[in-house]
Amino acid sequence: MKITTVKELLEAKVVWGEELIGKHVYSACGSDMMSDVLAYVKDQSVLLTGLVNSQVIRTAEMMDMVCIVFVRSKVPNQEMIELAKESGIVLLATDKRLYDACGILYSNGLCGNGVRRG
Amino acid sequence: MDNNIIRFTYNVDGTDFTSAGQASVMLKKNLRQLGISPDTIRRASIAMYEGEINMVIHADGGVAEIEVSEECITIMLKDSGPGIKDINQAMQEGFSTAPDDVRSLGFGAGMGLPNMKRYSDHMEIESELGVGTTITMKINI
Ligand SMILES: Nc1ncnc2c1ncn2[C@@H]1O[C@H](COP(=O)(O)OP(=O)(O)O)[C@@H](O)[C@H]1O
Ligand SMILES: [Mg+2]
Image (cartoon, rainbow over all chains, first blue to last red; front, side, top):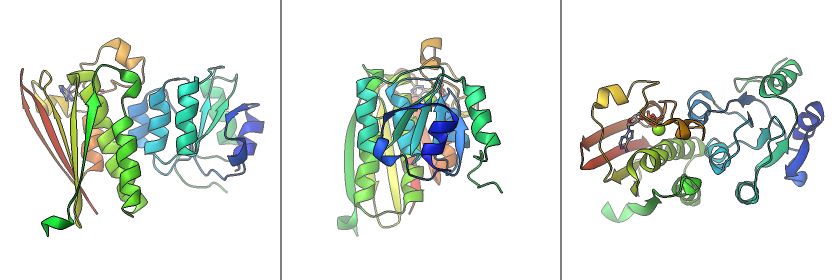
């Protein structure tokens, strides 16, 4: 799935990274606890979270993720946007809640565990 | 052999949570420049990141010293914090003494030390109450 599709499915807006939304993503995970993301996630590309601080961006950077979706209308601040730019991570924001956003992506074929479905 | 060892040192500021993780981001950049495989870099970066966060939330910061040889990346995290009372207990998944405000920042799930062990090939913790903690991790290249 392309990041553009993630954006469309979640009716999200691009906070940063418009020129990178053609990139493909193969997996995703959703959590507000960064250590859980760091523990269980392998070869993931999209992080969905309701947490908004610089550590979210750094966590994604550590995991080589390419896109972060902020749920529940959370908006990252300028400092976070700068960090995302440095790391080349696309930032999306959606009004949807974490569970719903994850469900929508999952049912459209974006899996949890680093494997492509179907 | 010794001249093949590359060293990096980072100060970890313990006063500002916003900057926590900066040293790990820098380490990751530096390791990329050395042409180490992405998978190895990721493991080293995650292990370092959890350790760096711990230094900030549990020990008021410290110093990270990294050595890269042909065979492995050695990460040494030194702090002069309160020390760890019971290392075996601290290593258990879910054990945390982090206050609630840390949890609301996305950390304090008691997964940090287990993650550090998971991602490194060798990990050693030396800690003395009231003196500080030194954690050494090796990641094979
Ligand atoms: N550098 C440190 N100095 C003092 N205590 C530490 C340090 N690192 C870890 N600890 C202790 O070990 C516990 C477990 O650490 P960790 O697994 O990273 O979980 P968390 O950081 O989420 O609490 C911490 O809650 C803390 O009590
Ligand atoms: Mg921790």
